[in-house]
Amino acid sequence: MPKHENVTLKVKPGADHGQGWNTVTASNGQMYSFKYSGGHQDKGGLKTKVGDGAASIDVHVDTDHRYTIDQVHFTDDAYHQLSWMPAGDSAGAILDLNTQAEDADYAVIVADANAGGATIPCDPMIQNDPRGPKPHPRIKQH
Image 1 (cartoon, rainbow, N blue to C red):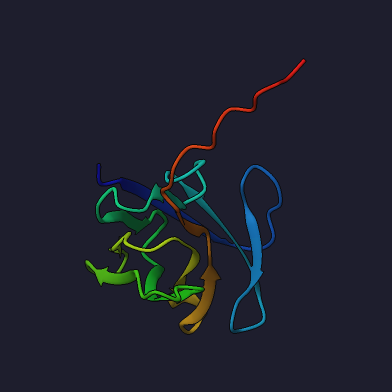
Image 2: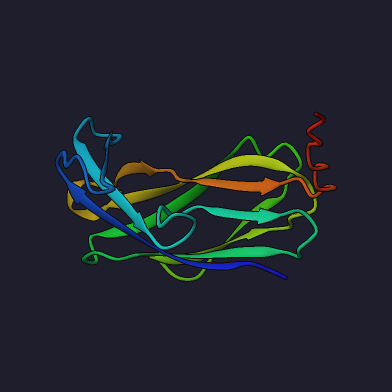
């Protein structure tokens, strides 16, 4: 069964720790915080089983209009399972072919119009677990 997640990305200037907020340094050297909601474990990720069909994550930035999605990067996508389909300045979809087992990451690079277009990397994880036989139960001998 194909998996579909809806994910919201919140971004704000400054450092904010705890309650799911992550602090990163933007391209201008300033600190920003981001937080994903929705997705796997409510952290923006995706976890599915290989062979369950293509999966997707709809991502949108949920803040004022100063933030837009500049680009999306993928790392550890050795089998080229992931692709980005933009849907305007602050939304898009990540498509996962889900035909190979891998643990890959995506990073949404957000631009801040109020800071001269400084970019902020925001990165959760995508995991395609292998599908295989279930392990045999252990037999306890007396």
